[in-house]
Length: 136
Image (spheres, one colour):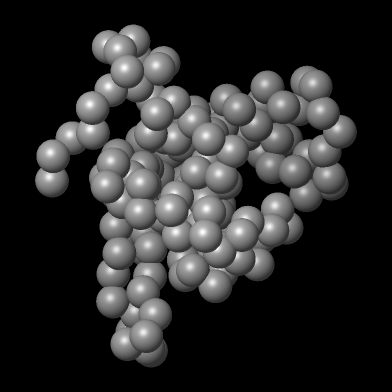
């Protein structure tokens, strides 16, 4: 598959073109931490993504090799999505975003627990998260 044309060679600009919109990182978050793997699962997120945006973001993430589609074991009408290695490599970025957000936003108790776990041993949290995704 041909790589998409980039606006510039700036690493931040190039990265934002792949995952910088509001919805793409939420899909990646759901795949990483919320064990959501199907189109229907993503629609159930508390952020309430619309179907047309979801379809577009899944396609864009797939074209940029952050996710891949797999056959669903129980239904030919469904597919499973999973992170590729390129997507898994975003775990440290997502962790840092969580730590940044803790400084500036009010968090739920569930998210406070996640932040506490990250702060206890960030490298171990990242390693465990990566290993969890690789064995699924």
